[in-house]
Image 1 (cartoon, rainbow, N blue to C red):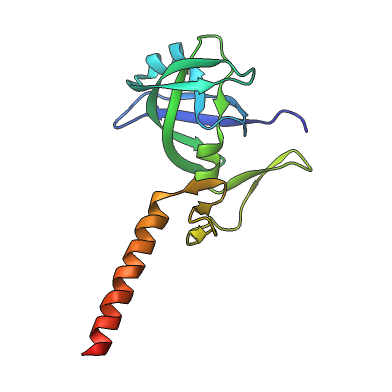
Image 2: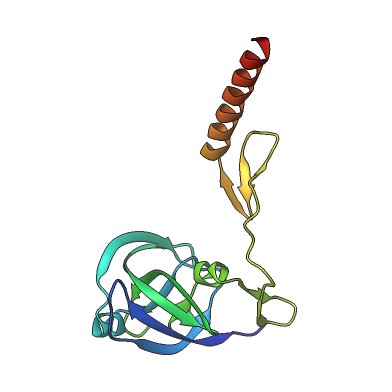
Length: 161
């Protein structure tokens, strides 16, 4: 599969007026997106936090991130943008792609739209964890089980009356 680049436009949130448009490398191995810090500062993106990211070589580095409106392929979403080195090639991570229902077809190396974005219920596993896609969620299942037990106890109590 070759490298895939798509045109992306970033606008600072909450009320940005500047824009940055470039061909971003689609990187399904990256969670968040990255653009040159010089460009993000130029359009008025404000840093709102710091996160440690693991790079492809396994090293870890802390980056500052801001929040932006992200437009590509006729879709609009919002999310984190990492203030990358000034000479970095911009990267579009998997979070904005998935949030608008865009996926990469590994066989053809092309970008494609999903027919629908999934809003399916959590699926409970035998060990009590739940999963949605690849994410594992432990607390929601415990809370759901507790809620179900309370509802069952209430139902049994009402039946005895």
